[in-house]
Length: 265
Length: 254
Image (cartoon, rainbow over all chains, first blue to last red; front, side, top):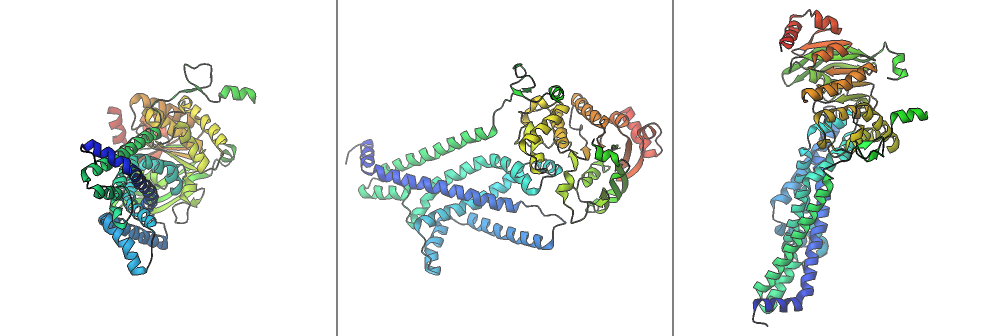
């Protein structure tokens, strides 16, 4: 075992570099899959929760919608309001004890991260939808678009853009918080590091490595998402269109010239 | 605008009977009656809070009337069984705050309704959109996003978007109230052209000169009722109701 701090770090990396990499990979994979599924759940729940009720709707539809919204509210409040670590214990060990269901560790891990992210994302999506000014909904309704068409063409694309920072937040939180899954035996970065640290009693060195890896993963994700946000915004400039494509001073795009069309007719 | 409609020019497009609207205990509209025939340009004037905008919103079902009926070609559209979306595809609306879709460029704004609601293919929708964008003088701006346009430009795009649906009747809810005087001019110019071409319109406006010059029928509203209505020269030059007189005097001294 080398004497210096850096020497020990190099030593650990040489011995356990692959384990660290594998652990980081598991953390990253769980976070990515969990966030992706969580977003899908969040969008589904958020969209249902913002379905408007009209006076003219039938009683059955009203009751059904209210019931579904109530159930979804219960889901959101319970999973947001209890620790993920406790949920992991309850779901993974509890399901075996009570229902005799033996989940695979991977399934349990993805399930727990997804359903947690979903609960947070539901509120985020709801906020994102509410943040789009109602005028655009009226604008869409006024040209005869239905609720579903308005949502898919007008509201959700803008809501998605507005909640991108929050999706990034969730991804970063998930990269870090998958460490609580070590409690059900998921060999992710934290679990790996604990093992490595215990082997030679090098807690400081091992966790320094873990911290650096965690930071690299979260920072990279945050920058990549920022890049995509910029892409979604589109360019700040636009080119004018013109009937005469040779006259580039006034624009680059051609649109049909009425006079020309008349001549052809 | 098209032959089929001008053929039965005498039949009303819209007939409003005893229309009332209350918000809670607040009565906004009381017993409104009027009708719109093909080619009519009806201007609704009156002080702020007199119920003009609410009336217009009731006509497009953005508000549900509390009582009374709105007949579209003789059929009541206020009932529960009515498909509001399909009705709205025939009766367009232009808003005070433009309400363009911020996630689409100018061209897409004018195409989306045609493609989703009227199920036109992209090429037909694009050609049609270009036709109306050209009419309002916004064809060069097809690649711009709404946030890159001035207020007057946005409103002209909004008018093109409504026209691209080829509505039978177009409702304007104070289309120039959010604009500065120069932009007001450009938007009113477009609307004058539409009126000349025979588009049926109901316009809620504070532009008295425009209402006088363009409309075929003027409705003056005060406190949720129609206080006076008639042809523009009669209503503007010889108002009968004292409320109308007061309102117009205030405008002249303005």
